[in-house]
Amino acid sequence: MSKVIAKIVSQQGHCDAGHKVGDEYVIDDKTPEGICAWAYYSLFPFASVLQYGGKFPWSKDENKVSVNCPDGHNPVQFVLTRVD
Image 1 (cartoon, rainbow, N blue to C red):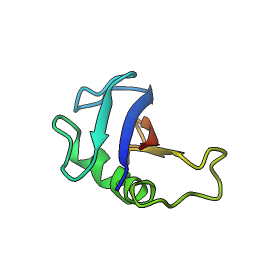
Image 2: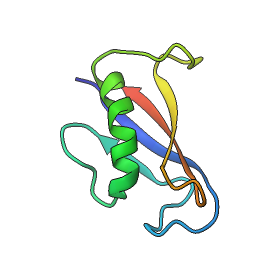
Image 3: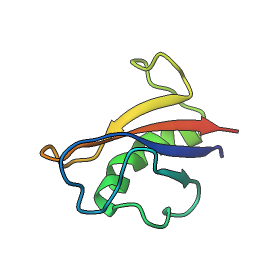
């Protein structure tokens, strides 16, 4: 199983969890400390695909995918990157 790094690349409005551009979280076999549960629930399915060798047909880099948190009024955008 590969590790996945979730990095915040964009944040608009006010994030109640305090996330900001540049924050990074390692996603492996445990929920990363400090990450918003709502964001993590959105990231988890995509991270699982990357962890187990999958890729997304719309992504230009098979080791990366962009995912947004579910708060449409204060969006936080993450880029997930598979690292071996």
